[in-house]
Figure 1 (tube, one colour):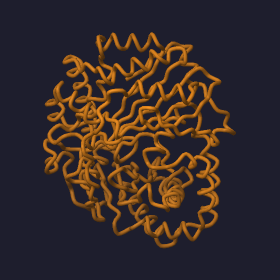
Figure 2 (cartoon, rainbow, N blue to C red):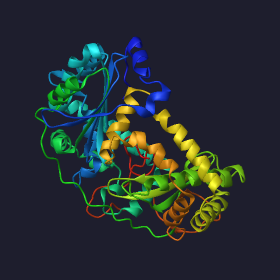
Figure 3 (tube, one colour):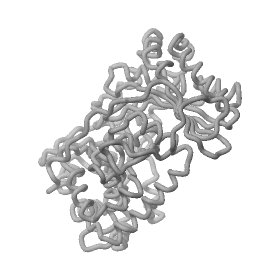
Amino acid sequence: MIRVLMLVVASALSCVAFAPTARAAVDIQTLKTPGGINVWLVEEHSIPFTALEIRFKGGAVLDRPGKRGEVNLMMALIEEGAGDMDAQGFAKAREALAASYKFDAYDDGVAISAKFLTENRTQAVDLLRTALMETRFDEDAVERVKGQVQSIIASEATDPGDIAIQTFDRLAFAGHPYATSLDGTPVSVEGLTRDDMFTTRDRILTRDRLYVSAVGDISAAEVSALVDRLFAGLPEVGAPLPDHATYQLAGGTTIVPFDTPQSIAVFGHEGIRRNDPDYVVAYIVNEIFGGGREARLMSEVREKRGLTYGIGTYLLPSDYSELILGQFASANDKMGEALAVVRQEWAEMAQTGITQEELDAAKTYLTGAYALRFDGNAPIAKIMVGMQMIGLGPEYVQDRNAMVEAVTLEQANAMAKRLYDPEALHVVVVGDPLGVEGEEVTATPDPAPGLQPLDQNDLTNPPTQTLPESATE
C-alpha cells in the first residue's frame, strides 16, 4: 500500500542520519528490556526521527494445510482497521501523527517497519500496538484485500518470469511450503475467513520469534520502555516450525511451453548455508561469476554475444534450504545458444576457478560498497534486525571488510569447485525456445501432496523464497 506523509515529514524521513565515512562504524548497543525482549539500538539524535524494525521468524511456511496464503493475507489486513477505527479511521489516525507503518509477509518471517517523529513517538507506538493487539479484521476489509490478492495471483499466472521461478520451486521442494506460493491459490484464498485471520495472527506474532532493532532519536531507556509497552500481552509461543526442505531436482532441463517472443530461464542447484564458515568466500566467488555487471556471465552472454540484456546469479540461503540461482531472458531463437554458454561457464568455474586479478577486483568493490548500505536510519535498522535473525553479532559490521580481505585465491578456488556443480545444474525455461531439449511440464500442475489445494510458488525479490532485507554477506 502507498504511504502518504506530509511533505515536511517526507523530507525529514528521507534524510540520512550518518555521514558516509562513518556508516560502517555505527555504534550498536545490545539491550534486554525489563520485560525480557532483546533489542539492538543505534542512537542518532541529529534528526528528531526514529526507525523501528520488527521481525517474527516463521512466516508463510507456517500456513496451515488447505489455508495457503493466510499469513500473507493477515499481514495485509493488520492496518485495515483496529480498535474502534475502521480502515479509513486508522489511516487518518496514522496520517495525523505523520507516522509510517509497513507490514510484509515472507516465507521465513513477517516484517513490521515503523517510522515516527520524536514528538509523536508515544502516540505512534500506541497506534501500532492497537493495530497488532486489537486488529479488527472486518468482513468487508477481508473480502476487499482477498480480491487484491486474487488479482496478484492471476497476474503471476500469466507472467513467464513468475511461471519460471514458481516451476523451479515446485519441482525442487515438492511437499514443502517452499514449493507453493505464499500468496496462495484462487481456491485457498477464497476459503480464508475472518476467524482464520485471528488464529493466524496469534500463531505468528509471538514473543519466542521476536527480533527488534531501532535507529534514531531515542535512548536505551526510552526504547526499552517503548518495546515492552508495544508487545505487552503478546502470545508467548508460536506455531511449530517446519522441517528443512529436501532439494529434489537433478541436473537437466524443464520446459514450460508458453506463447511469448522471448523465453525466460531460471537455473541453479543447491547452494551454501548462511552459517557456513566459508559463506563469505562463496559470496565473493559468486560476485565474480554472476553477481555484478562486470561478472563473467554478463561478459560472456551479454557483452560478447548479445544474447540477453542482463543475466545474474545469487546465493539464496533461506531458513530451510540453500540455493544458488540465476535468471535471464533471451529471444526464442537465441535461448539454446545462451544456455550452452551458461553451462560452459558453470563447468569452467568449477574446473579452473578464478584469477588473482578477479579476486582483487571483487574485494575492492565489495569492501568499498559495503559502507553505502548504511545510508539512513531505516536501512541501518533493517540491517541490524537481519543480522540478529541469521545469528551474526554486532561486531560483524566492523569485521566484515576484514573477512573479505582475508580470503585467499586458494580458498576461492576451492569454493568454486565446491559451489558450482555442472552435473547438478537444472534449468527451467518458459517460452518457445529453439535448440533446447528437456522434459515439458505445464505451468499449473496438480497440487503438491499434503498441501492441497495449493499450486505454485511466489518467487519475488528475487527467486526463490521471498526474504526480508538483511545482512546477507
